[in-house]
Structures are given as C-alpha cells and as structure tokens.
Length: 278
Image (cartoon, rainbow, N blue to C red):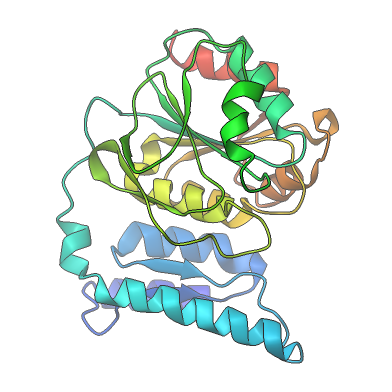
C-alpha cells in the first residue's frame, strides 16, 4: 500500500482477520502518516523496516532477513486476542518518561536529573549505548540527584520516582501494569541496547502517557522509536544539538518532525517540572 491506499483499506476493512502483523517498508516522507494510520486504527503488532542492507552485501542481507523472520514469527504466534485483552496499566504508574542517549549521554542525563525537582510522579527508563559490563557503572556515574537508579535484572516493576536502566546484554520485555522482564535474548543491531525498540515497546503500552527525551549521542538510533511514540500520542523532546557532545541522535529525532520541545538538559528538566506545577 501507499499511504492513501492504506487509509482507504483500513477504513473499508475495520476487521482484518487475514492479517497477523503490519510490516512497514515505505519512503521516509510517508512513514509518519502510515504509522499514524496503523497505530490509530489497528491493534495488530507492527514492525518498521529500517536500514535494510543492500542485496549485494549478501552476508549482512541474510542476517537482516533472518532477524526479520524471527521477529515476524514471534509476532504471528502471539494471539491478537492477548494484545486486545491485556489488563490496563497500573494506575500507580500513569506517566513514564524514557531517556535515551549515546556518546555524551551520561553527563547530559546527570545534568537533567540534577535539575529535576524531587518526587515528580513519573517512572523513568534510561537507555544508554555503552559497552557490555559497563551498564552497571551508570548508576555510580550518573549521581547527585534525587532519583534512585537501578539496572534492570530479572523481573522488576516501574516505580514512580525511580529510574530503571536498560541492560546492554539482554533485551527487556515491557508488560502491562508496569512490569518489566529481562529476557535471555541479546539485542540485535550495531549499538546496544536498541533504543528504537525500547521506545516503541513502551509507546505501545503507555501511548499518550509516554514521554521521550533524546539526549547527546552518535548514530540515528531512536529515530524510528520517536515516530512510533508520536503516532501513539506520546511526547518527544530532544536536547539541542549545539549543546551535545555528539549531536547525531537528537538531530535525527528532530528531523522526523516529531520533536515538540528542544533545550539544554537543564531547560528540559525545568520544562518537565512545569508540567506538574500547573
């Protein structure tokens, strides 16, 4: 489908029993419209094809194909009824903000949290590109603030006023009622953890109650996640590129048109605090 045909199809076919999942593979200038349509009018699982290796690069292309098939298999065997009947999110955690970063991130996130007033009624998830075995050190490096920070392990719960750090070696499953489960599956991709996946998974659960802040970092990880968050009704902010050690990640997010606020880490913290003082 192109975007117009997709909208017409969804309007005509309110129920799509012959479809198990949507795989989005379209030009960048149409992707936001398609995500808005699919997430607004369909409860089916959704995958976004991004950075497809050229067929000429046979090895990389085969790896991409295998990973795509693995993801589709997981989505297809999960009954649509289970998604539709998921229990509501626990009312004790109504707002979740995910902080994502890469190079320059720890300092930016520390400045943000140090400025943030104590005891805001939000739970936070922090995804940071970092080497394996260094993720546990983030809790010691990003200090001087009032928000307890813990590396996700086993099964845990999102808690207002706390920060859950995404591990580098294993994927997380974000479930309803604030539950978070560490899996045995490694992240796939050039950078770990995969921030696109973290954002998109949280967006599908918390929708308009999710906020995303993209801090300093290399590469464009988080770009697709920001599109999914916006399509789900969430809020997307970014650190101003000229205040970053590495501007690539926030610049990629801003280029999507999904970012509604930009600022230094301190300005973003003040803006978030203002939302709860009105």
